[in-house]
Amino acid sequence: MRVILNTGRTIRQGSYVERKTSADYMEEAASLNMNRMDMFELAVEDGNHIRVRSDHGEVVMKARAVEGLIRGQVFVCLGPYANHLVGPETHGTGMPDFKTTQVTLEPTTDPVPTIRELMERCGGVGYED
Image 1 (tube, rainbow, N blue to C red):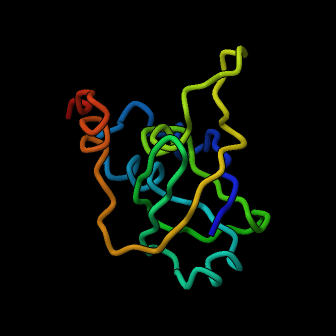
Image 2: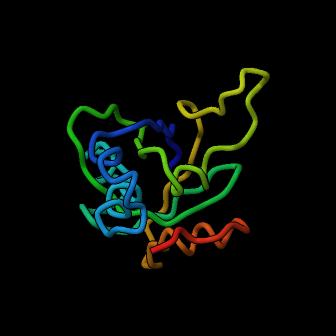
């Protein structure tokens, strides 16, 4: 399924920003917020794993049904999971395409990577515990 990825801050994600190694931060950052009908079409339920692919990269996340999302759009809070999907191109504005990234969704049984694994995958160093 091809959809538009929208990213932004959430209150919950912001409250954990100083504790990026916590399970609560990972749960919020690794959640792919979706319209229930899109989930039904993909045959996934809350908590199922979904591979999210963009032209920039891919990551496995957990599906989460939320009310109010338009069909064909998904939301991920800003953080390491979103960073693996949004490209670095700013088109001269200094701001990447945090609101218009096209992604493909596919159910998977692969595990959701930890934040440390994501950081190491892109050549960085995992957050300190």
